[in-house]
Every structure is written in C-alpha cells, then in structure tokens.
Image 1 (cartoon, rainbow, N blue to C red):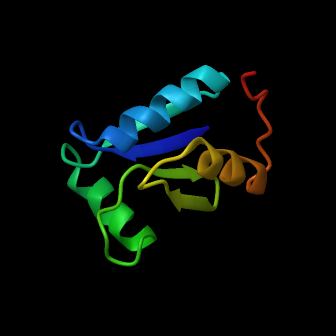
Image 2: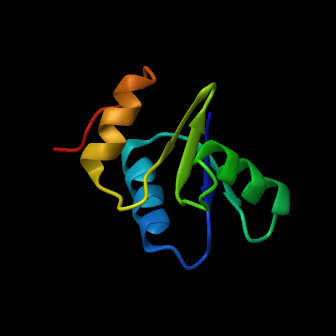
Length: 87
C-alpha cells in the first residue's frame, strides 16, 4: 500500500489524494504535523526538506511537491503500479 505523507494546508497533497482516489489506488495518509517521527522520515527521504506530499511504496519514495498527474503517473509506473488512467 502507498503511504502518503501530507499536511492539512498543502494544496499539492489534496491534488495527489484526489488523483489516487480517482485511480482507485488505496493509500494511507500520515499528517507530518501530527506525527513528529513522520516529519523526520520525510526529511530523511528528501535531503533534509519537509517536502509534501511524499509518497512511499515499499522501498520507493518520491516527493510530489509541485504536483502534476504526469509526475504521479511516472512514479507509479516506475514502482510497478499501473492503474487504469481516467479517460
């Protein structure tokens, strides 16, 4: 399952959540402002930056800051998840 690290105020997080929902991909959301250990993980994964949304799938992680559907699609293909893209 995908884990998405977010904040409540992040518009890119809302867009990424909506895209995953539209693709029918299950995910767990973790608000890094509510869980300090999650914020530390995000910073380790992103070279010291609190970059959200950060998605993790198994050993694969990506920051989707400046979200675009193309960025999400590319990462999903890279990690082996090939959802039906909406037409």
